[in-house]
Amino acid sequence: MAAPKFGVLALQGDFAAHAAAFRTLGMTAREVRRVAQLDGLDGLMIPGGESTTLLNLMQDEPWFDALHRFHDAGGVLAGTCAGAILLSREVRPHQPSLALLDAIIERNAYGRQVDSFQTVALAPALGGSIDAVFIRAPRFRALWPDVEVLARVEREPVLVRQGRVVAATFHPELTRSPALHRYLAELAAPALVGTTTVNTGNVGGERTAPDQWI
Ligand code: GLN
Image (cartoon, rainbow, N blue to C red; front, side, top):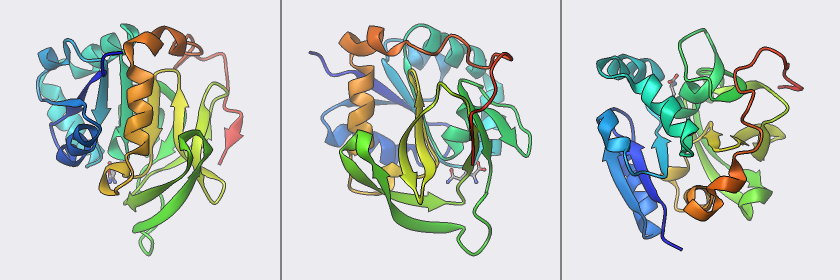
């Protein structure tokens, strides 16, 4: 099976570390700065950084339309930290978002004292545990029923998946564990795409309500 082709949105933030993590797995990691560079990719990573800055930089081209089309066409979308904020359906305090993940997320939610820290997240879906670096991180405040929790810290969800959308509130690319990047590669492998389209039909819909409040 051919390795999936991943891109890393390279407008702002720590895209280089994500690209390096994919490359250590022997994968392609294209830096994506223009909408047209999404062509031919199986997945895209939206890195951590500053979501407000990212939103400003995304004004230059129709990124929201392009990323919705990329997702509709079967692409995997992953986001870490600021990327997770961008993917979520509702952001607190309010700001625009792609709304491809049925979650409420709150920015900078750890308070000043623990504004940045490193810990180990329990991640049975990723083979046990994963090192997790939190930097002015957001927290998921509510998840809709179609959202699966892949990793937790002290019972709190820090890595979730809904169909082809995966979001982490931490920075997996700043540790030596490539477990999440490997998981994304498996999710984006062309042969698997057809099996990962479940439960994405009502994203952003109004009929359902969160079933997990955090
Ligand atoms: N605090 C940033 C934001 O609100 C996210 C921080 C990060 O990506 N490390 O966008």
